[in-house]
Length: 293
Image 1: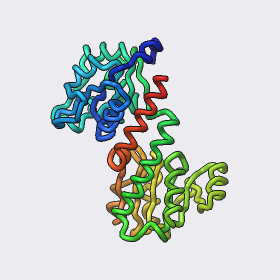
Image 2: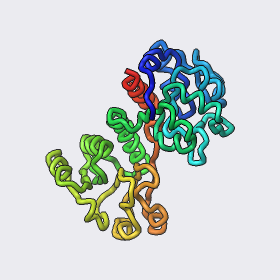
Image 3: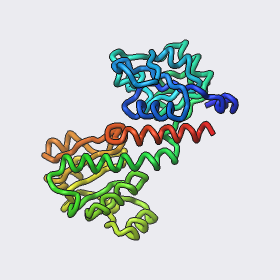
Image 4: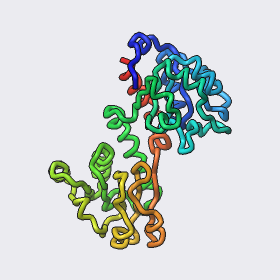
């Protein structure tokens, strides 16, 4: 990322909000309420969003003083992440040239830069990598995980025996919420520091590196984006245990093995956009404002 003139950052009057899910729509609405102009690009299937201008991606990129892409900014094939558009859109050379002249905000910036290497000479900010964003985003993620569990699990969270694998931002928030709902919580982590915190907070502790199977747990929430629930571990896991994988792809669960063993396992990605899009949009906005300031 090259530097950008601070005057350019401070003179932003119009945001181009490109693609994404409902988070982007609530983000756009919140920006207009703050007095900014907003141009939506890549929302062809939407008829109207109040006073917000709808346009194609090229127009939005051209007229926005700053551009906000979603999480992730592009799909696996390099096309812009536009679930509300009918046709795929790949950034053109001319669009890339324009984007290099203004601040660009996105989640998972490495994917956008890989799809459009020219942007490496521009000013691209990855708001999703920032700690302030990640901590705030852990809340809607944890709430969404519990909502998913309430849908999939036939019992109640109260009185359930749950396991949270990973004690990062999401793991910390999720463990607290589960305990507050009356669940008996076990947390899997590796470091002695995490073990001390887990014990002090009243959770049971399990060393992730010594995890060979799971017994007597009703629901498992995995937040670790590396193989944890391998075939060998799943073979030693109770068949009536529900596993919810929150980790980014490729995740931490061997779903093929889980299916063969008759274990109910599901992947739950992008929960803030599905369960709390308004709050998630506000978090993106606050993070972008912090970067601009």
